[in-house]
Length: 239
Image (cartoon, rainbow, N blue to C red; front, side, top):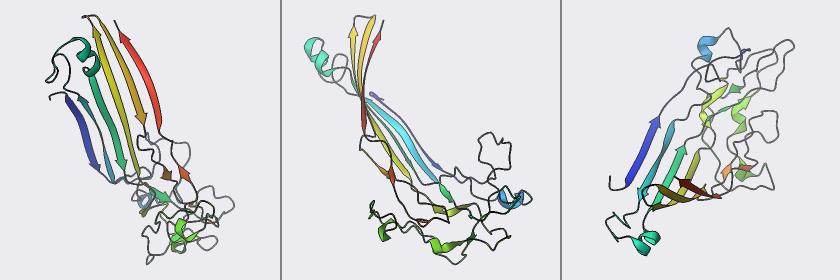
């Protein structure tokens, strides 16, 4: 491998089901509109469905210093240029399906009511990235057309489903970078100094749009999220 190690994977998947628990256990019916229509619910896109996931890591030991291809000698040169490693961890994922439910409430009914979805609606993502934080309902903040969804008539079930495969939230991109310097003191003692950058490109993300059909901001992106770039320094001594 000449000092190079990597583990990279790509997953193309589709998840269907009527559960939102990894163990498929719960003490209530969950986010289902009608527990008597489980055949319909079982064909709904899963809450954790991500169509595309590309992730992995790459680590490389630089070819300098004693026992390496270049500068193969000990002393000061090895102390300065030998024992260096660089690593990258990355993950890229497509968005999760959005769950949109009605704000209708029926006395004695303890389960969510689905919305009606326009079968001829345009479900393309309309968000252009021209985000205006000072005006939540600015035209540039609109993510999907709220007119695609409506409350069912009072006392009726919505046509649903509870989650929409064609209406997904934002994806995720993340990269972490690490630098390591290894020192050896004889055959017994080793010292490693490590510096990591988490979210190395300082990516920030838009929060998923508002999915409360009763909100004036329904269908709009109103905030951002994500941790800023962070650095951490670590020292490890082996004996």
